Length: 191
Image 1: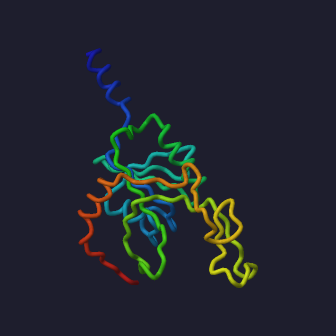
Image 2 (image 1 turned 45 degrees about the horizontal axis):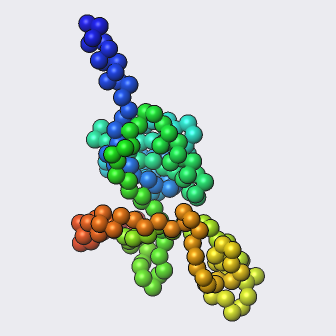
């Protein structure tokens, strides 16, 4: 009897293993039942009905019984860094074997992609390390007001990134994921 109680106590104290961690940046309203942002369809369609408060994070963690986890970080690097650190330090979760998927709005030039396009990246670039001059105040010969950090005009060379500003993704894993999903039709519902 004592051994069974000890085994039960030990089983309940093991961290919850996440197989996949899906990271989203924003949600328009509630996690379910209203206008969706980046999180809501994951919650509703994958039945992420287990909710875990994350005291130092931006938003509670959502999970299902299959090990799929969704974390809403909030917009901007400060919210994202704090929330992911809070999750990584939370002893309730085992993330050691989890795959990570970041579902966010990265943006693309309209000449290359339309609104609602799905894009695969080989690199992740922290674009927050720069500044923008208001279009009403920038010199007339400039084509943009975006100026890289430590530069005085747009596109000023050399364009050397700071340590930790550019990350190459796993080339094999990225190619595999692209090949697996490249022909997947996107269903668009308007209204």
